Image 1: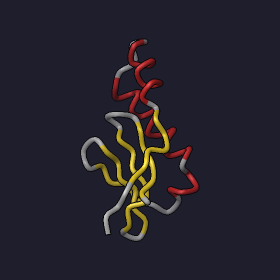
Image 2 (image 1 turned 90 degrees about the vertical axis):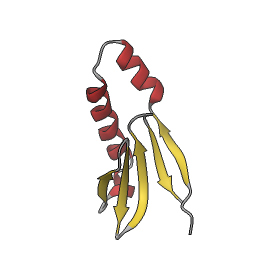
Image 3 (image 1 turned 30 degrees about the vertical axis):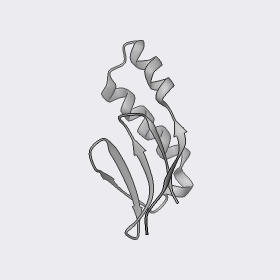
Image 4 (image 1 turned 120 degrees about the vertical axis):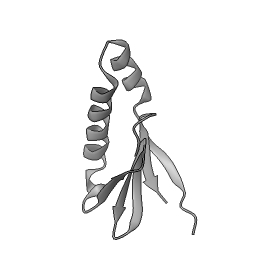
Length: 79
């Protein structure tokens, strides 16, 4: 079975604005990872998170549930 994903959140413009104002990229990433996890809290409940290099994958019972690309500042759900 091929997993398909769709973008459900896009924080790229907000990231660009904070970065342009002088915020460090690592601090911006932390803000938007936290925001993603709070926004998706009901869907992410009971998941484990794995950093696969630029992308966080959220798993429940071994199945991919959601993802967040912290290089591009967008994320979503697997279908």
